[in-house]
Image 1 (cartoon, rainbow, N blue to C red):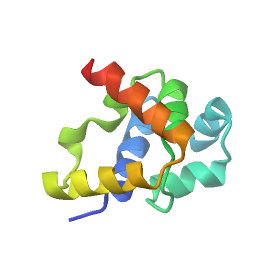
Image 2 (image 1 turned 90 degrees about the vertical axis):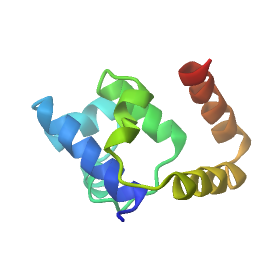
Image 3 (image 1 turned 30 degrees about the horizontal axis):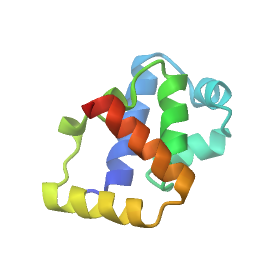
Image 4 (image 1 turned 45 degrees about the vertical axis):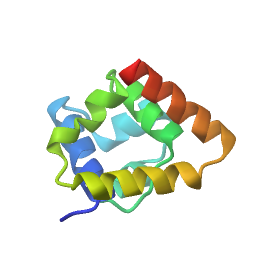
Amino acid sequence: MESLQIAFGKRLRDIRRRMDMTQDNLAERSDMSIQYISDIERGKRNLSLASIETLAKALNMSVSDLFALEDFQIGVDEMKAMLIARIEESDEDSLRTFYAISRAIYG
């Protein structure tokens, strides 16, 4: 089973290509470097919630649409464990962003 980072990177690449956007275009729109975008797409970066939100805005889509979890090949238990680990190691700003995102998605 592939990691969430790799699955997310593939998803990001697919969305970017479907929008006929280059890595350079996405880098400019998100104020990230081309190398960083490339690393994300290859599953080499562990993104912060703020970076995920920035990418979603740059692609004019919601965070939930960017993730489209039905496309991810990851088990529910593994997903829960990864989310809990990310929450536990997050600083206050990241936690507030995560909380805001989850409230926006789930109410």
